[in-house]
Length: 334
Image 1 (spheres, one colour):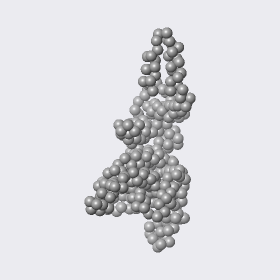
Image 2 (image 1 turned 90 degrees about the horizontal axis):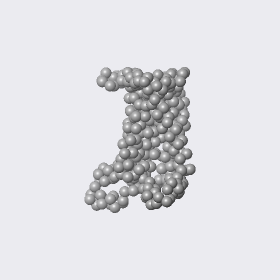
Image 3 (image 1 turned 90 degrees about the vertical axis):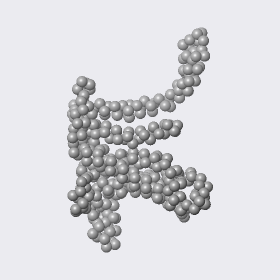
Image 4 (image 1 turned 135 degrees about the horizontal axis):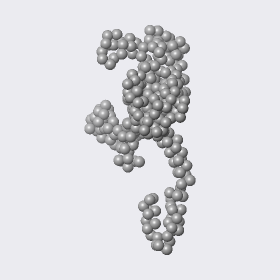
């Protein structure tokens, strides 16, 4: 489009002058389509990128929310970042964020792949199973959190009720507050004395919600593989396990990458899920960067400190998304 505009501009003679240029601009595709792309462009620029920029600026100040921040660059410093990197609670939240990110994404991909393979085998009621598995993905984090908060209830939650009903009372636990003593294992490096259930309860609930999404992505990838490849592998005497390991799974790389990026983004957005379950303070064993950021900014009025934590969280999100976008750009998909 820009090349076309410059070509048309260069075709004008000196007699046309500015009138010809103005006519060309008015007739250009960019100008004629401006009423459609300019308003959302300006709104996104102000409310998204403007807000991100303002948040970064606030993180360089000592803004506490009671007075206007000082926007003098001479007073900017990295004090809030030094405070974060020396805060033990920040490192615990960072650790929990990465545990949630990696565990949830990996288990969701594995569960989704297993479900996709089962559905792809031509089972009866395939459409019904596909709908059932995907239905939780359509629910919001808030609805899912309320549902699982009842499921995890110690007295009336369905998990403990079923365990007691089948005679496994000793397994009934306070899933959102309890833990299990690791005994001698607690003396090993990086191993806690008590393994808390909180974060694992969150991961399990999110796994239930998002495995169906991974299943749909993998199922689309499986259905895109030509059937003659399956037949060729069988003719060569490959077992089902070897066929999937050597022929099918390597061709699901694109599905794995795209699903993993989406799942990791949802893991970083799990704030509302944890907030419904635990409030703004899930405790050291389940606190993540987003809940810590909210608590510091809106509960403790440490706006600058909360902004610094938000910048770190934004950097983590960029680390997740940027390589994928760059790869898509190199392949000409963007």
